[in-house]
Image (cartoon, rainbow, N blue to C red; front, side, top):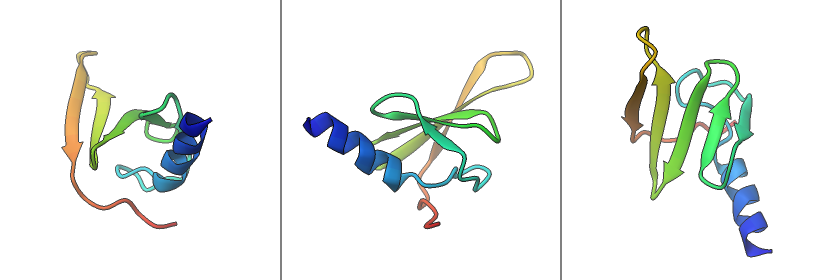
Length: 72
């Protein structure tokens, strides 16, 4: 029961995408979200947001985002 509460809190915390500022964020798992507008996967662990996206060659790139999440 506690993990469901944590999932809801995490979803409410990441209200918009740090890349495109879109609110089209979906929860994939406990620590992973997905932005449907810019097609990136986001992980939020220990206050650091990691952004995963495909580059032109088709390999997975990771960027670390240490900024603040937008309040929408």
